[in-house]
Amino acid sequence: MPSKRLQWKSLVLGCFQAKNPSLEAPNIVSKKTSSSRISLSDLSNYSSLSIMSDLSNSLVGSNLHIFTCQELKEITHNFSKSNFLGEGGFGKVYKGFIDDNLRPRLEAQAVAVKALNLDGKQGHREWLAEVIFLGQLKHRHLVNLIGYCCEDEHRLLVYEYMERGNLEEKLFKGYLATLPWLTRIKIAIGAAKGLAFLHEEEKPVIYRDVKASNILLDADYNAKLSDFGLAIDGPEKDQTHVTTRVMGTRGYAAPEYIMTGHLTTMSDVYSFGVVLLELLTGKKSVDKKRPTREQDLVEWARPQLKDSHKLERIIDPRLDDQYSIEGAKKFAALAYQCLSYHAKSRPTMRTVVKTLEPLMELKDIPIGHFVYVVPNEDSLKVNNAKGTENGHDEIEINEVDVKTKEEEKKKEKGHHRQRKSRSNRRRVKPLRSRAVYSDTALYKTLGTSLYSPKQAPQGDALD
Image (cartoon, rainbow, N blue to C red):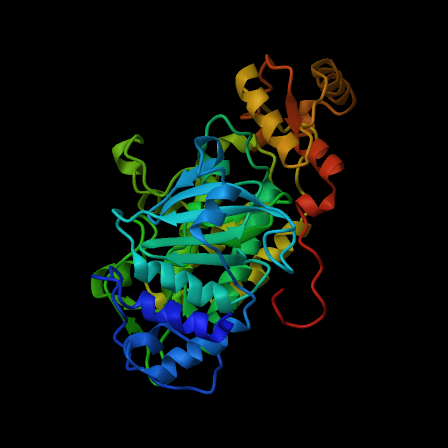
């Protein structure tokens, strides 16, 4: 049996024989540094055996598993439609299940298998970027890469399975329940910690593709960054930026990057600001279906973030006023900073994390009024099926009980004690569905972990 080191050398040799790689290498001269992590820029000299040896040594210690195409066909039932999860720029993603007998020391688990579309916009180089970065970088807010397949022209990646899908689906799909305010804050904190970890590496990593669809959610709504195909090594010590071809997603890219091709960690901060704006408003970064002046979310919403009176107009109406007013103001102010047109005026991701975390503790969130209704029985069946599959039961609250509690509250306190700005806008709509979900009920049933991130040990380290 060949050693793992030889297998990795064979992998790298095969990798660089691919024709017409679609991702440009950054304009950085390859330099050997004291860091043990191999960078994508180190591969600028493909014929260097020393670089290949370094890559082999680095990735052997990463515990990545090398799968065959046949094995991945078996665990996905030949990439069946019933296992199809979605499709992105890289290719289609399928759910699979690994049993105890497939690999030594690999526990039985559900996985997501991403297959490169050979006719798509991305290619071998993006696949290699994911292997290099996620094969070496491990963090609780980065999706875990379990292994890969590099066989003939096939390029596949095997990740941990994320039960709740991605943020884009949870935030924008009309048939899904609205994300409660504290859950949105928790997701923002997790994604911010993942970016802070990347930016603070000895060799900084610029993620370059921060967007809602690349933020995956586990069963407890912990956020993890995925899709590192466009990730790139940051500037060296004597450089201020990396110059590269402009790539990414419209509506998220920083203005200076679009205009000059100059890339820094602050480019990621801007993109994260767009995600914050999406969480706040419940609107996509770009949507041609909206009125003309509102189609570009940043252009429309950013000027209103600093005015508390205008802020109420842009906050996601589906929250039905069930959010902290003080928290919303601070959240909006942070988004405004991240979206600054001047890169140097934006906060670091560590500062973003420190700003977001206290918002979880604010107590001025109304209790008992926030409800959302599954629109029809068909979607209820789909949600129940997903809840059963993921090991989480959906929560049902009797409609009569909800109405009774509301009536008792009105008798005891009356609406005149509610904050005027909210009472004028709050309306309790008739409930036609049998399944009604409340923020409070979710909190009681799923526990505090739904909202509150685990307490980190003392110190500045980001978990």
